Length: 131
Length: 295
Image 1 (cartoon, chains in turn orange, green):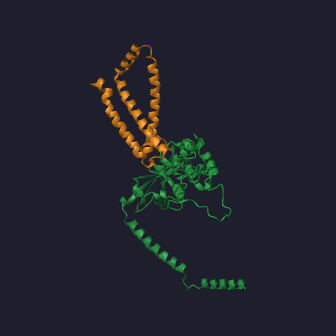
Image 2 (tube, chains in turn brown, cyan):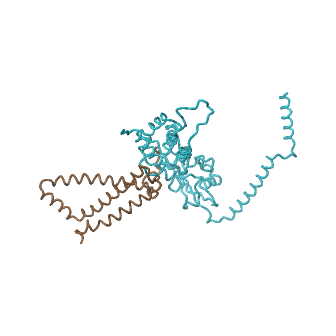
Image 3 (tube, rainbow over the protein chains, first blue to last red):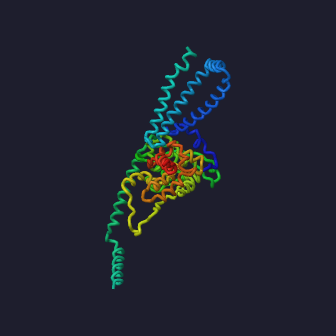
């Protein structure tokens, strides 16, 4: 099914406006999955440099928490993790054959729930840094 | 004796046919049909004559012809087509071909969503031309050949790969045991028929395969239509356990059901509303149950 000439945006992400719920769910799931894998490695790398003494660990963590960008990244990480979990539950349902007709609704629901949880988490993550 | 009588009969028949005055029911029907057509034609003409500019729609049609110099570069042609109530995309294309450019090429046959020849990429989505109402689409209507398939000419794509995949799942009824009497019916229970009912509706139009971006990236992937076909027979209880195992071996291979990543694109575009993803998922579960045995 390869093309002998370029048909423009018909066959690539230039079509994103035409994507439906299931496609968006797939893209977001892939994206959040890779972000979480990336975070896992960063997490191990950073913490393994701070395992010498208890004081070193505390100073590393508090040094990171003092950076505003880290606070924002934490909110982003939560958003990514929550969406990945909720959509994972949706995919589990799809695999079990439960409610496949309402798969688009469950995608929108997981998006809304992710948004709500992230908004609710903002005071916790940014409270000390901004106020 | 009998031959003689037959001869006589044919002779009398020939005589009747030769007589012009006697009107046969067929002639009467044809005359009525001609009248009806004339009236309809007149109606249509008056309707079309009263149409103003607002009642025309613009088609942007993908054009490409590798055999003609100057048409080898893909381009879009605009056609202005008078709109009438109930007009489908296929009607509009036929109008454009008949009135403007007879070289405009597209497949169509039954015009009632049964033959599956006219799956097209209309306004960014795989649709069946004869089943899509022009009034449902935004103007201008952009018509392209199915994505992820080689274009032969204009809107005609090469379906060979799709048919190969369809045939690779052995899409025919093949029971382990057939009744001794070849004329005996092989009955299916109502429940079982109900289970495979939706999967039998496939018209081989290729819209699902074209919408699936896994199939686009993996030429060996069976594709939604072929897996649906496999589902139709694997779930048929009349075929027997041995045949079902053979069918499962085909669909649980690396490029079988496991390539599906549940994007639901195929289910979304299927003109016959077959729950393709549901069938693929059920076959996945069937494959797991078949291979994992904890007892």
